[in-house]
Length: 434
Image (cartoon, rainbow, N blue to C red; front, side, top):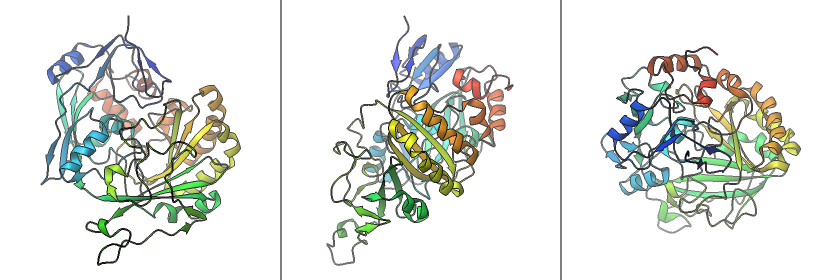
């Protein structure tokens, strides 16, 4: 009898022939060498079958979890399976930080990098961009080390959909720890947000807009507090405090009580707001790590579009509001800086992302999602690799200029396709023929 494993949302059942939790690198190498097909499951926060397999599934949470910080080089070498919340806590205790975090700190670092997951901020690229080096167990069980400085194929090896091997460690750039304060504005009219998009999303270190596309939006503005100025917030101290937020801005009102991205939901599991300064890892995510952010009864889709098409993209989604809203829990708009990683959804272009948290009924969601894809794909939309999309592998692959280069990389490094499941083979067939 095969082991049944369910993803976080509960919409995907994985039924591998064998599930492994190796406790040592040598055990992992043996598993990979002996397997015909292998996939790796991270924290299970993908909403499609990107991690699924009918063969051998590897979970990395039993491997040693040491974090090695090189303060002089400003890098940290970390185990692939570490959750972002744990990594952030360790880095902060040592006086360092990651430059950005996604809305959920519950996910694994390697899984986030492999699928192109991101946070928000005009100057902040996705989570894979700070990766400097990778340690990977290849198809023969061999350990391969790749680095940004010495490996020509490195830009194709970070956002790799788990198709190059089992990543065991990542070396990432780190920065000195910093302080963030977040405020929320409610009731921002959508026409105002679209007209003043650049103003809205340049207002903080990280900015998110939440909306149902038929009402108004709320803006979550996370501003970096200069070092040494935290104690001045609220006007205390002998120097000028950081500028207070405007009470009315872009047609919205500054909230004087905590908010949840979905109006009416309990706010206890959200990170602290109301301008209270706090460490980066306790403000950049929307949700606290000690709480499950929701019941998991949802589906998610996300599309990455060129920043230059932001006005068009928001306008077409707004037009579809009456179709989307009945099956939508909430939608989030963010911005992401460009990177050079081949399969990153922000590769080669500054990006606006449109995220949709749906009701957990794919049949009901399909007409709305189909209408969205019909409008957004011609604008250059790239679907998030780990979320629900209907357009199929050909449309997804066509959005990436370096897709053929990645196909060639796979055929060189894993010609038999040991690490390719059905999801990946539909995109990048063994042998290269579509």
